[in-house]
Length: 491
Image 1 (cartoon, helix red, strand yellow):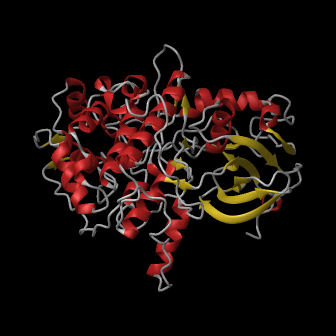
Image 2: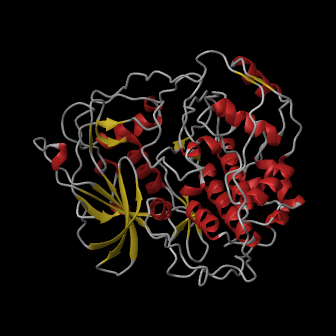
Image 3: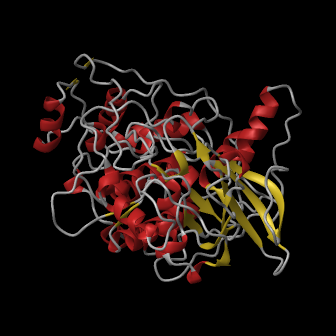
């Protein structure tokens, strides 16, 4: 903690870490409120200098959104800089945001640790309603999130859900032939068309990821896990449960990649029921016909058959919560379950430290919660897969349009990608197939040009941050300019 400081705040606990910086829980000395502060380090590498493009994107999208189910960015604090300073001398940029007590990954992991269902079917229904409400807001504003997963879904003690981590988000444009990189979304949450290298996609990609989260809440663990980063293996896991597609669009993509799959009938309900029994923290009775009807509308193999967020919100499953929040007891105030904290506790235990999981008492779980013994992990049989040579090789990076930065559209986002045992592979972006799309030449370039207005004289690669300590609504795009150029290495 001694490496970080921000005037006007007292840092408490570290709640997140990543390649580009760390996140701390902090209290404001002025209003005594608790905030989350993300410290963004400046980078100096052989490929790029300055601030990552994912940071620029996150600031841009959080500035432009205003929704109760999306984390709020209150202010930005950046350091004084001059052209003679070294990167090692620069203090980090600080993003002051909502503090939210939990992320969904941490809650699910805690349930596994305690072998206890710490949430009920009404929690699942209310959480999914809020996730889809957030997506409805984003999609109506032509924004794709592109990195939905449980660790990017925050949950307050009062069960308000907030989406976070907009570093991979994308602004859609009306009309035109849009192509985007497929190197987005964690492998276990990535839709089939992106796994097959489709670069023309839209809001339906987020819907698939939301469906994966829905299934994960129902069974207590990711529903399409693999033992490697292989995209073809991921496709096989999906087809084995959802059925081998007969859709001409998907079949064409498979043929274009010279991929052959065994024929499987649709079997998702039985698959999820068995997986729920194996994980041991949720009750298989949660997987009702009504639940499956909604889930299947989200997990359609063909993207054109997936319902929109607005359509899904009208499903009868949500009748109970559509007009007013359900009466759910809050979690205990002392319970914080962020991914970083849970992982640190697990690591300490495995390293010989004394395990210290939260007590089962005082969790604020629903009345009648029962302890269930977890079964061994589920192993999946891969079956027959044919892949052409080199289909899973790394793609070469395209040249950057920026003078001082190189870009690699095959590089995963600069956040923590390492997970606890049994989920490690799903937290990696994986090696991609298909054609590389350089997104820095589209909307992101526009953002950088906006940011240059009023900047230091020089090339695109010579930009600087002024000192900012102000409420966010007073900041204009010209105030957010990266030092030493943009580092678009995180798509």
